Image 1 (cartoon, helix red, strand yellow):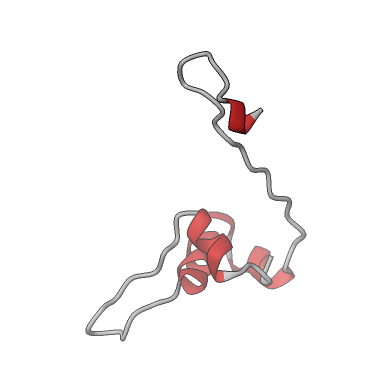
Image 2 (image 1 turned 45 degrees about the horizontal axis):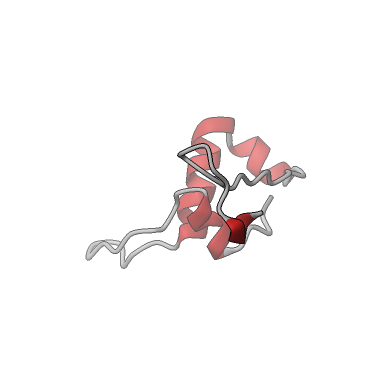
Length: 69
C-alpha cells in the first residue's frame, strides 16, 4: 500500500493541492490521509497488500472502434 506512486495516487483522484499556508501537498500525502480517514491509522501502518483493477471504456455507442479491438 505505502509503495503507491504519485501517478497511481492521481488515478485514485488524489492530485494534491497547492496551499499558501501549508506549502502544498502531494497526491501521495493526500491519498494516505484519505486512506486513514476511511480505514483508520492502523490499516495504513500495517501496509496491506492491495490489487489494482482498471477498466477501459471501449464504446459508448455500441460499436467498438477498430483501434480498440
